[in-house]
Amino acid sequence: MIGLVQEMSDKAQRLGIPLAVQLDLTYRCNERCVHCYLDHDDHGEMNTAEIKELLDQMAAAGVFFLTLSGGEIMMRRDFFEIVEHARRLSFCVKLKTNAVMVRRSEADRLQALALDSVQISVYSHRAEVHDAITKLPGSLKRTIAAVRLLVERGVKVIFANVLMRENFQDYPGVQALAAEVGAEFTIDPTITPMMDGDRSILNLNIERAQLQQVFRDASILGTSPEEFCAPPGGPPAAEDAQKMLPCSAGHTFCYVSPYGDVYPCVQFPLPTGNVRASRFLDIWKHSPQMTEVRSITISDLPVCSTCSHGGGSCTRCPGLAYMEGNMRGPSSQDCEKSFVRTGVETAGMLIRREARSIAGLVQIRSAASPDSRAESLQNCL
Image 1: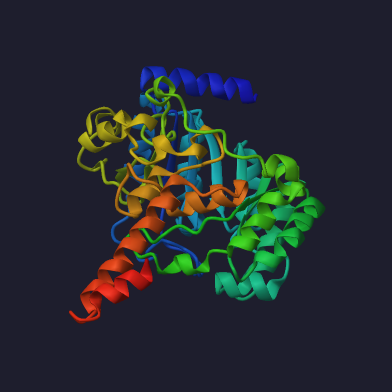
Image 2: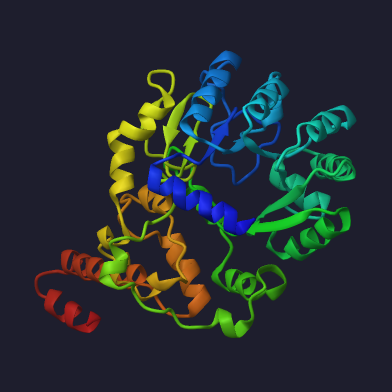
């Protein structure tokens, strides 16, 4: 199956087909998770007819894998109508939900839809921790009750455990709970900045030692410490770098917001067009912003193309780099993860350290009096 998906992806890449799309149906939510990057107010969501028309356009464009997410997708009263329309168009549909609103009747309807999977956010096996993150009392109890209903009906359920300082110690408990109820288990150690650029929620990120523990945990990754500690393989050869793509964003994947805005990825909030003003395929093929993203290869990244981590240990996200100010630059969060994997500083880390040193020297020079400036600079060096 993995080989078939890779073959589909390679062919879509060659033909310029948007093989996969994430469509957020709403940003409204019945939870208020502390790490959420969304604005939960409704600023004019697409209505049912608009979404159905968009799905028709995406099917005609060649989209096959469709992820429906939010917000909480079941906050929309037309949720099942939308999913049923997507299945009639033969999309392979994956849902992302907190499942708080799933009861027996909803579970029966989800079973009948023959979904690829339902990804459900579970932050802790302890109600006091999970509910403190979601800010919805009783949310863990309701979520797990829904999981059991879905698993009983043969629906594939995946636990999504976002790691942050408040729940880091509980991921083994969440993993055990997933095994108990018959669900799969995934973790995500990356907190995403707000879509408006606010980076304050990044303070929720786990500490370096905790990240290292996760990457060394063979029960999660199936990776031995020896493999974990392997040094980076070095930057790719120049001819390879000219062909290698940063990721699938804008190449075989894109994201559409509840308001019709199209972006290369949910973590890459570069506006490329709006389906209320242009057809989906026209945006995909002709948007100047999408074309720019699509033109970038590893060789176009002045820092990352020279980095020793470019051979495989780095999972650089161009969207996170974009939110730091430069889509062709390094992502500090991914640099950190690659450093933790290998114990070797990335090119981005070295450049940032040098920049901080230079800034410190400039500050000292500016603050020092004329008589003491030379002495202060000498002491710093």
